[in-house]
Length: 406
Image (tube, rainbow, N blue to C red; front, side, top):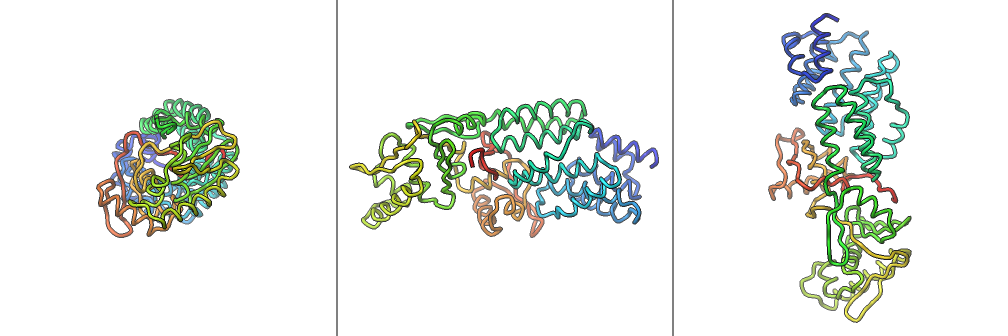
């Protein structure tokens, strides 16, 4: 490896993409193409970066398997940043195995970290935790330690373990400062905002107030019965009843919980659950049927008792009933939860992350685009959707992955 390639690699390792390009911008040999690709990725030109890395992988000889594997890892990182979740994970696994077999422990660890980040992004937390348990970052450079701690913090945040998340972010901050990479330090600061920004609202006895993530953790560990409008479930200590596929029952449960300990009139329940402007006998008959179904679903948590004017919720064990709601409520909030990270997403990537059909996601994006809440660029398979981060809407509770008591 010549001195210019070495100098360019060191510049990239310190986050100086411009300095690296100055040394290799006019060269077309395989190592220079790879370094140019990584530099362009750091500068944000992901399309050009991907093309350069693929050219570098083709330019490396058949015996340069390690170099080609490093190009695959770099391309996988670009795919993750550009939210190309359909990128073949098997290629990354194969590249990691090659790097490990040839003793490149640092880049093999980076490949493993990318795979874990992808699992975290699509809500497969158990798999992410299992893969993370096999990884010890103690002997790696500070930049890799910071990346590892960011993943630890991400899993802890999704699991609502705020103390663990704060400790991991503190370690990530120290490692990022030791690495002296501004972009990495900014990423740690951005991740820390999730813990210091309201992520939900508590609605109880006619009042509401914002909650930080640690407040949500404390609420779910309390003895209160929580009607969770973030996950569409009803829960108390140790018991969770999911109503994610029963929107009418959840609407009734939430209306009853918001009014607790008072009752709710039949007309108000009909308007809330069925969106009926004028209640007639057919609506009332349907309400009786749905209330019976709700009783059956909540039989271990609460009773739904009839009153003169309507119905009331009576918890069996809990001392109070509260509603946990997102900080901002609007249609297609799950889609907005992902787009709020400021990255550009394809509709297919959103479908993978949400576990929904591509057509359902596309309809949601079209409606949000017509309302001016998201913007798109590109055409066909290259079309991407994004929106600037919405203040007060980190939406970590809307992202996939089970909560502690699930």
